[in-house]
Length: 245
Image (cartoon, rainbow, N blue to C red; front, top):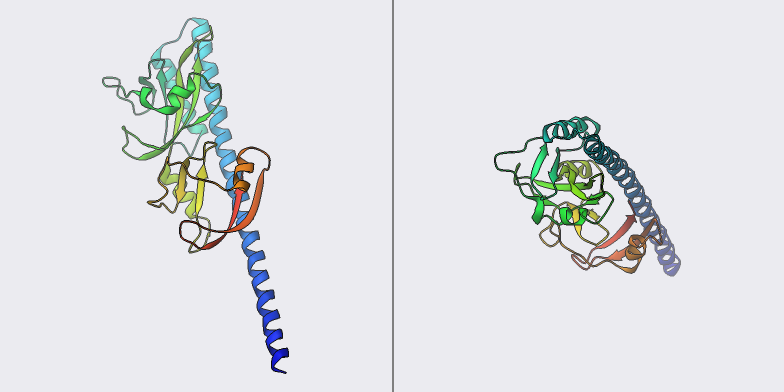
């Protein structure tokens, strides 16, 4: 009788454990899909706005009526199309920030030291740069940039949007991820663009190691996947859902 009771208890506990894992899988997957759709929609808004800026920049030059103030005003007008943006600005070919909002024309900031500005010289697409502390607002921001091209195909500078990292934190915090839950946003070079909650062992901009499944997703072999691992950082067992944005 005792053996039967123990087997019964073991069966109940095992079924409870399986339900717990299934619930964790479903919750993690749903949260990842929600985040994927939110970020995809947001990045698409920025991409469309920056492509418009690039087209306007080229058209102004082609028509022979380009001037800094007119293009600066155009960039400021794009702000209403990107509600999540902290600022919309632009830099000339030398990296001087002279277009857009909240700029200092007497002492323009130099984007030449920023990685995303150097990438914009060769990459003809929306570039998600590394998080940086803004020298204008002194807040952590995530830059999303698009190259500006002259009519002859030459590099004319870059238009860019700054997303305040605090906005991403607020959006992530609105999701119920549990006491030990973590949300990490990586770029395609495995660098941390954002983490909620913040952690000293995974700083913004740092490069992390990923497992084989995550690497396959980053390589485009899969769109998303869910799996359970023991975290090498805190040794807690976690269910991970990874989605490609």
